[in-house]
Image (cartoon, rainbow over the protein chains, first blue to last red):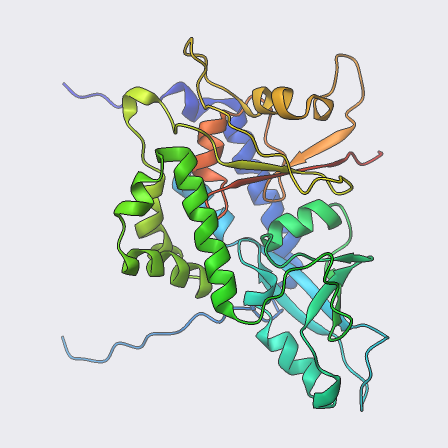
Length: 51
Length: 275
């Protein structure tokens, strides 16, 4: 039967640390600045039609 | 457990809050208010600052407006380096927003390349991708792509479209399983006060005897001073995308997940913060 295995890379400390630091980075660099304008506007696509 | 794909998104959607101020040497007709913007870490200054240009041009005479360029604490900022790299290299650990001066005259020719249009940025970006693919796959992947595929990579970056970019970029990240990685890792190591712009040499992700190379192995070979000796206080920070990955991190994984859209791993070595 098939079994799901977790590779050593997925549990490694270096990997966990990268995830944690990226989330800290978001807090540090973005949390207090969400009111700033984005340099690149995201185009909004409005799809019209009937189901 | 979080997925490795989340890392790609975090890297792509990184933003640097920035305050642009017109330099005092510039002549204006009215007072110029500062301009605040969230800059994508993975993009280029001249690609994402149309709004800054418009904002300041409103208070200037057309005759006083030449090519726009940017300065941070006396350093002219190279538009052909990704924004996140410029910030990590010159302004890590400083208070946000990042405070940048805007200039419209006295273009520093000795420090900066001219950037008359977005097509110059596109050419630079594509040449980086080609160089990276030459290192990773002897150029085979990029050469097999069609013109429209190249455009897809560029348009994805230009318009901040993660899915559009990665639908194509994943091909540049593939390798034969039995080889356990790319042929060579495309990387560049930068220091804020170095005479040479960066260190770039050939480096394989796996040693001939099958040992997986790490970030530490790379630095040991390229810039040993960046690694703290036993019992010694850390002298340098090794920064990629605003974080400090552990030296045990496999370099192949870093190349696949923390490379910039130009497919290079840009590594900043900066003096450590005194606690």
